[in-house]
Structures are given as structure tokens and as C-alpha cells.
Length: 244
Image (cartoon, rainbow, N blue to C red):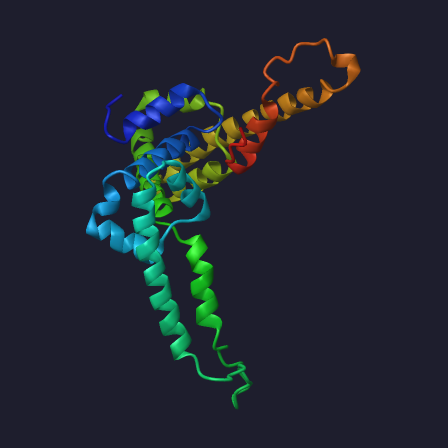
């Protein structure tokens, strides 16, 4: 199997035999992006300008805060707040006084004066420089995955022996395969991953069922087998959320 900057992590993640290889990659990319952001990156003018405009989501504010570079984070928060205050001042200034979004003569509701303000406020928490960076990188991993699928039999063999995917990445693979593959390739791919996914969803359903049964005194002395961590793995499979 030919190796590249994107193919190597895919191979490594498949070798981990986790519940979703793409979640494993995403987790590593997320950690690396946070470390990079709190290293020298925050001093680069182009990055700072984008962070000032976009900011971080609540998850990445917690992550960057935990890195313990309080000066670096404070500098970014300070200039981000400056940008927020500037934007809010402009939005408030542009609002017409005492407008209540009355019905126009055409029978259409006029735009409420606060709509742009609320859209901006809603975007503050939902936009994130690090999320954008990681998601753009993950798109390249997905593209590389399909490039390898069409050329590397070893990848296909590894996928056939994996534990499937989380529901998010399963959906993404099905969607992206329509663009990346055609005809026979598309059918072969979907047959493989749908079969793998259904098989492994039944596996994890049986594991969580046995975990539940272990609370019954009749099964107390029976071995857990693979079910001891079935609850966090089931949650992860469904929602891509690591609760451990």
C-alpha cells in the first residue's frame, strides 16, 4: 500500500480496530490543531485575523484554556472581543428606531430590525476557527480514502475486517461515495460498508444487551466478555461522543 501524509493515518486508524477509524483520525487532528493554535500559530497575522472574526466554539475554548497558555489565549480573546464590540456597535447603529416589523402594503412581513443582530449573536458560538481547520483536513482524508479504495486492495481488506463506523461517518461515506465512485465501484463499495455496518451494529447491540443483563443477579457471576465497556462504545457508535 502506497503511503502519503493522508494515507498513513488512515492505515494506522484501521489497524487500531476501533469503533470508527475516522473518529480516531478526527480526535488526533483535533488535539494537534489545538496544540498548534496555542503554540506559535496564534502570533501569525493571517490566523489572528481569522480568529478575531470567527473565534472558537465552546468545546475549543475549553480545549485551548486547558493547554495552559493563558497569555496566548488572552491575546486572542482580547482582539476577538474588540472585533465583536465593533461588529455589535455597527449592527446596533444601523437599526431603525422603534421598528416592529409591521406588515407591508404587499402583505409581506418586513424584516425585523433585530434579525441581523440575532443572526450575528447566534453565529458567535457556532463558528470556530479550529473546527473549520479540522473539518477541512477531514475532507482530505475522505478524498484520500476513496482514492485508496479504487487503487489499493489492502485498504479494502482492512475495511472489510474493521468494526464499522460511527453513524456520522457512515452517513458521510455513503454520501461522498456517490461523487467519488461510479457504477460498479459505487455498488461494490456500498455493499461492503452497509454489510459491515449492519453486522457491527448488531454486534454492539448484543454487547450492550449482555451488559444490561449483568445487572440481573442471575448473571452476576457470568463473565463480561466484550461487554464491560459496551455502554460508552454504544454511545460513541451512535453519536461520535466519547464519554470516557
